[in-house]
Image 1 (cartoon, rainbow, N blue to C red):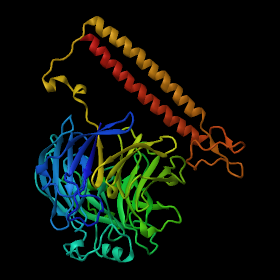
Image 2 (image 1 turned 45 degrees about the horizontal axis):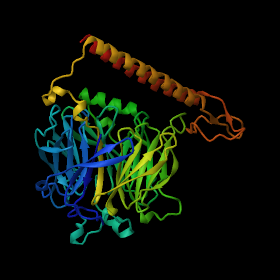
Image 3 (image 1 turned 120 degrees about the vertical axis):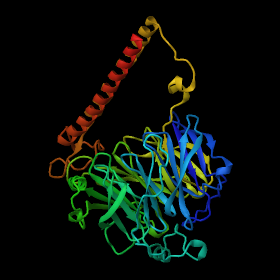
Image 4 (image 1 turned 180 degrees about the vertical axis):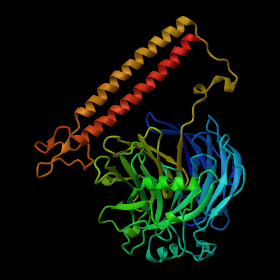
Length: 532
């Protein structure tokens, strides 16, 4: 797997990084999952450095080896660059498009993979640009624009013209930051792909915008809702992430250092889609949000001053069991356990702990494809730190692997097959052939290996099931909503399996069945090889 690190050049962005200005905008590393180490493979060509200025965000195409990177500039429209990712890690530019707004900070590819939606922080506009679903190239310019500021000019001055540094969190800075709308991300709902959720840092709102997935059209604003508890203090919503299988969304509030947990009204989203494709009036859906706030939880230790911190990224671990957020100022990663079971607390968070990032200003981080390593970009100390991630406890541990990279502000991980793993015909070399005896011997060896894997998986799952316990309340009843499975064993406080544990058991067995199905498919491939 290659780990792509996006490097910042310090010129015309809204915030004010303190790290070293990079001479190259994009670095590509190979990530080794055996020990969490990395090796530099590629640095973007020098001639590209004056074009790709302040890369702020990247997105890898879900079906193609194509990378999209956008630039952050509050004076000029952002640019989106498309690169083909070669097996050796080299990036080849295949296209460029104008983002249609200033300080481009987020990119979204829709479910049909026919459009990129760009979020422009400085003037708050949202734009849609068509792409080819087969090659990933741009096929046109901006085709749809949504402007929550309705064409008004930005009130706040740029930093170099006397404006504030958007990295700070004091009262005067926040006042200027929130004098204008500032869209910070756009995420399409994962259920029907028709509602775009946009955190507006400048107005402490989450906007819900109707998106037509076939036309690529941002049609209308359906609803807005506060991004937090409405305490009278600024929240500054930055990113929103959906849980992979629960009807729950998580918003990180940059200025208040909180995570807001929302339940998602899936049935209403389905109604919106049905009405949209039936060409019915959408006015009936205006004014009522599909989100409901159910929890707000701090990202900081209780005694740490909130004004000394701003939050960076939030993400849900691929397993769905943990939520992770970065703190810039406290220089930490905060990790929460997600309550999976029960109904009362499902999707809510319980803090696991705070972990220092071995650097300053962890603007961004990313899990590797296995979910067992966390790669952190410490922007203001010019380093990348790698941590192992405990899939059981949710705790992270420094691997000792750290890399000097000037002002890293983004980490994008994507799997790229090595040359020997790809079809040899793609590279002009002959296919290796086996005679019947060799194929039979190979099949037998694979069968023995795969059967051992099934046996070991069964043992592992059985052990996990047998160890599951749940906490008994003071009145002797069982807490099925705690979501802490397994929990610390103390004599007299736990009881055998109950319905909550049975659900955990069902999930474990389902994972085992999925693994067995994959093994069956591998056996079919081996059988076909024998026939040839």
